Structures are given as structure tokens and as C-alpha cells.
Image (cartoon, rainbow, N blue to C red; front, side):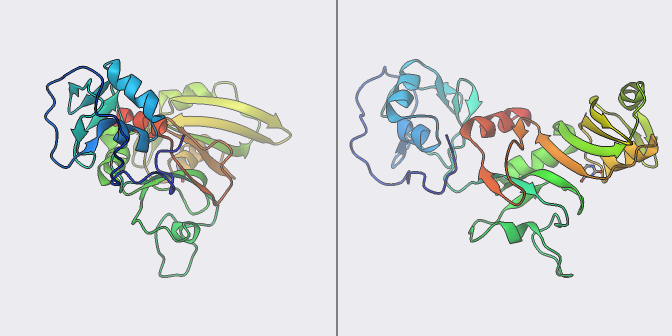
Amino acid sequence: MNARGRNRPDIKDEDEDWDDAGGERDDLTDVPGGVRLQKVLAAAGVGSRRHCEELIGAGRVEVDGQTVRRFGARVDPEHQVIRVDGKRIPSRQDVVYLAFNKPPKVLTAMSDDRGRRTITDFLGDRAERLFHVGRLDYDTEGLMLLTNDGELAHRLAHPSYEVAKTYLADVPGPVPRDLGRRLATGIELDDGVAVADRFRVLEQAGSRALVEITLHEGRKHIVRRMLAEVGHPVGRLVRTTVGPIKLGSLRPGATRDLTTKEIGELYVAVGL
Ligand code: URA
């Protein structure tokens, strides 16, 4: 289910076959000229109209903190905060949330005066002005989130909300048994100690090893610097997760819309 697909229904069209009847009364004040709640839910990718009505009827939908039980309640999807089972849904029509698999040798920027390839080269004719959430090094590959939701982007990049990120790193082996413990205890770097949340060796073959490291850190070159400091300089580096979002099988250079569930999980991760 895609929340932000380009072919999503236009929430503004006046589709009068939505049923105003049904459900119980509640105290929510209808927004004059607003959109029916079940229509907002369906357009956000929560499910079919029928499913959305069931959610409303079951008291699982809140608008600005108030449980709504009427099927025809009219809301303002641009400004009101709508939650299903306590999780915020992306109700604004103008916001876009994308996962991008950044290939190596691509600059984390929207343009470059030195003519290097940038994220913009992979976005086709998208009209929205997107921000990249955080950065990956020129040579690093993998998951980047792109959005025009400034508040979410800001929080995801802010140290106080730092979400966990996981990387696969190709390093010289063999990797000693106590490396995970050392990384979890903290590695002294020029700009302070860096700590890994998790570390494991996925493969060891000949003189190379493939390791997975998870950390909350956002400092520049942090994974490369940590692993170099413990004697395992990184060759290839791929980011596989950002908070609840996984790279999965997304091809290098490709983008996909995040699902409604993923967007809800991102909101939770940054307290929105
Ligand atoms: N750590 C690095 O060393 N490089 C990145 O691009 C991201 C994290």
C-alpha cells in the first residue's frame, strides 16, 4: 500500500457517494469545506473506504487528539493531525516520502558546481522540492530518505532524535572476537568517543570480512573512521536501514514511495 503514489486519488474532488450517515456522534467540530475523514484515510493509503469506516466506527481514529466516530466528519487534512491506533498518518497531499538507493560516486546534494552526479540525476521529472535526510559519503551506497516534509527531515537529522542506522561494511579480515565489545564500549576519535549499538560479522572469507554495524551517530565518515581506528579500514560501505525503514531490494539509483505504515513509524521515531 503506497501512501504517496503519484496515482493516488485526489482528495479534493467532491465525491458525494461517501456516506455521511453511520457511526456514533462525537464532539469533533466539522471544518467548513473540509474533507470527509474516511476519504482522507483512504487517500493516505490506510485501506479501502469500507475498512476506513470500520476503523472510525471502532473508535480507532483520532483527529487532533480527539476520537472521532462519525463516518462523515469533515476535517482539514493539511493542518489537522490524524492518527489511527495512535500512529499518525500522512494526510497532507503535498508531502512526499521516498526511499532512494544511492549508488557510489554520487554526491549527497541536489546540485554540484563541479559537475559530479547528484541525487537530482535520479529523480526524473518530480516537481516537488525534496530534501535529503542526512548524508552519505560520495563513495558510500544505500538507503537515503528524501522528503519535502521539513519538520520530519529536521527531526530525523537532529542529534536529539538520532534514529539508528545500519551499515554493511567490507573490511580486511580476520575480525577478532572482541571487536564487537570494543565498538560497543566506545572508540576514541578526534572529535570524541563513538559507540556502536550492535556489531556482527556476517561473513569471513580469505582476507576479507563482511560486517554489520548499527549506530545512532550522524557524524561525518563515522563508520569508516571507527572501523579504521580499530584496524579494519572499510572498502565498500552500504547503508541498509534508517530507523524503521529498510533498503530491501531497491535497485541502485531507484526510488520508491514509503508506505503509510513506514511513514507512521518514522513519525513515531521522532515523536511527531
Ligand atoms: N559513515 C560513514 O563513514 N560514511 C557514511 O556515508 C555514513 C556513515
